[in-house]
Length: 113
Length: 111
Image 1 (tube, helix red, strand yellow):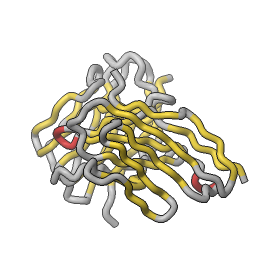
Image 2 (cartoon, chains in turn cyan, purple; image 1 turned 30 degrees about the horizontal axis):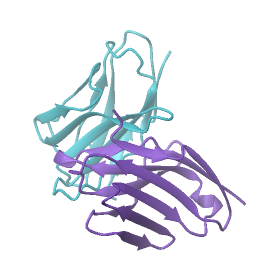
Image 3 (tube, helix red, strand yellow; image 1 turned 90 degrees about the vertical axis):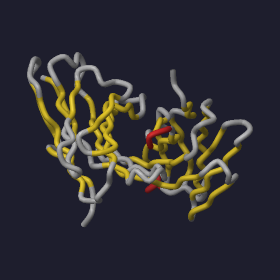
Image 4 (cartoon, one colour; image 1 turned 45 degrees about the vertical axis):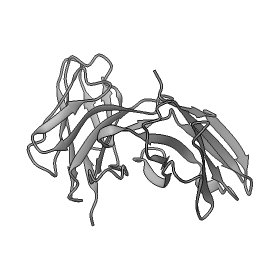
């Protein structure tokens, strides 16, 4: 089955620790995205990547980092510089053809203890 | 600055009724307007989408109405069912396939 997988589903972090969230897609999509979701605020774009080895900051990139070494993978690191990291994190991908339909993974819920 | 404004924040509809969610935007460069449905603890799923050269699109019980001059679009859910209870997001696509999302509407359909 084609799709987007995110792991882990739940993640707990102590203050001061960096954590990495995994996102993998087998849809052969060129573009991948990371969003943060907080109650009542919709989805906010953290980082996005249109092609391998290239990525751009979104609206709330501070305290996060990404890499795009492979087309199918786009991991997100939440660093200790992110002051309020507790949230639901969503990864998405699209073909990059300009149509605009983004397909989302199941999400990772990160809680800082 | 919120580029896509969505209302209402929450909505309660009786089973069989019509659910209406509205969105407004400012950026005339947006060229694609999808709606997503999200169940608790899950990722959003594309429900229906429209381009600005079309005034209405219908898929089953779901209809998007689009008013380009007013820069508004809305989602209508006909014959609403308890299984439609979810959070709905409107969005608009800008350059680079980036989507700008509304804040979401929590829909509850009472049986």
